[in-house]
Length: 277
Image (cartoon, rainbow, N blue to C red; front, side, top):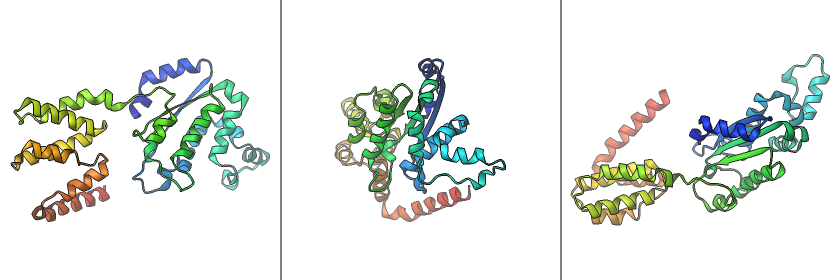
């Protein structure tokens, strides 16, 4: 998503779409491991989008927050610290006010890049479907004013919700590279048929995640070094978790007991160094 957002061709094509209107391109990246809820919540996404939009286009503040704007302009000795944001008006309300405004529709074009919908995590009332419905409503409210580019793992709620739009499946674009990498690492397996079967099985299971491939190949090569045959690893491959966090847990548990103390010491030193930085 970052590659698409920063690519010159993206800006070029969006500029063609915007024509004479002012183009505004902003992004938000969900981050589930984040310690703060705003990094993975709907409200956090709305704050990010609205802040970046208004920072780049301060003339739109009076449309997004007309009440606060009126109080500010009425005060000759305005001090921004004494004008509270209206609690009854949410960032979503402010964005919808912009999308519904006829002047904005004529003069602006918005494109939002929103990454990792599958890392969205909110209250029980705001499940994935809530966010999907909100995103779709923006486009329905002002179809000529806004474009969305979203990314996610292929969870059904997202696949079904955006089935009518153009789509890129990353695993199809990176498959050739992943197969070449896997073959290069399995050169010690002399039986070509076995090597090809393992290559295809590993890439198929990866769902396009290169790190998953790297970790599984490392596990396989270690198994071969320990004298195991490829057939036993093929059986294990079918049971390996497809999610990275679950794979990490599986790999940690697979460390031999005699080596765990040293492994934990290394992890502890790495953690301390990370905290110091």
